[in-house]
Image (cartoon, rainbow, N blue to C red):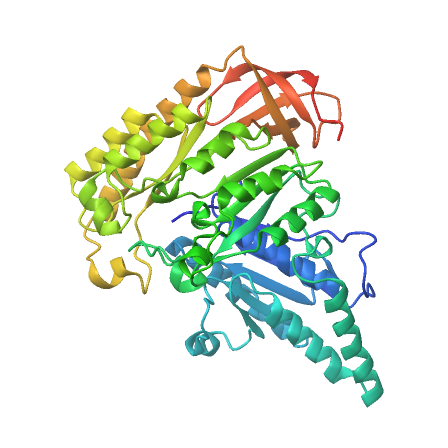
Length: 491
């Protein structure tokens, strides 16, 4: 359990992308596409990549399902509720497909996984394409083959094939021209997600990600830098570097005998040099791999925000051992102290699972006490649910009653609400830096460097601006303030 859904809606993102003017290659309209995404930030980034590849071959986005010629469902199975929603959405598309059989329906993401699943094809025979996480190729290949097959002469088929080869040459995956964003028309978002590590090899006993996204694969540093440059050229001002365990960036190279490869600290330094980029974040980290070099980079690089996401998952050593986390509660405690000592003003976020198999009331109390002691800035809470194929589902009994899981979850929610209210109250009357992302219910909405949500009223056009805000009201989950001045960099 690492990356999470960034949407205000805690369950579903349903979005489409805007077309971009002036993109190279063949821009003749072949049809429209619609992408439905559920799950974590990595899924959002994967959907961006699919959108980019579709637009490269002439498709444009639509937010109307009935207008779409291609629909992609990007799925999540980290929790049962997410899987159930994806299955429900897939079932609702069967009539959409039946009305026009020539439409293309693609299923993507963790429900598909990295290996072919004949049972999935048998269960959903109306799906045309099954796409592993982070891979747009199967859909693009299907659409290109269908177009070639529809041509009436050998010459026309050769021309279409030649055009596709030319597009691949002009716009390689990962180039600035292939990066797109999920935004219903209008400008690019102010903040964007950039995957830097795909998959995971750590294999916590509760986590399905290694089975569905495959082993850990770090992207080349130069490719990531090129992607971020492309995002900045579109107007993005903040990027979040993503990985299931982001602080393991580069570990797979070194473990496979490639000495001297870059690590996350090197990547932060490289991205920091990109002109026009104002802020950098990264998530989600693992306590065992939070190297001092990474903390030093956060401290020393002005663009890197003082915001560390490092899940603890539980505060009891026996539960942590059953989870196969690789550290003790005391080691996590020491890490938090080290982070705070190294980075002044840092915000530390965590994840916690309640009701893990075998968790007793006393063991849960250890988790409660650890959270009360450390007073972290945010805690993402979840009730344990067994996921098929994981070690905990195969070898452990889900023996904590659901009612008890709910009770423990609510107890931590109440505790964390008090902690967040206390932390945010210290900012009352203070002036903070906010990157304004959009309007929400008549107010401008943005985030501090510590990722705290701030609302402010102003008649000025503030989207994408870096401003100083005087905090006039604080609550546990957000703050409100008054505009002081615009401090946006000029380059």
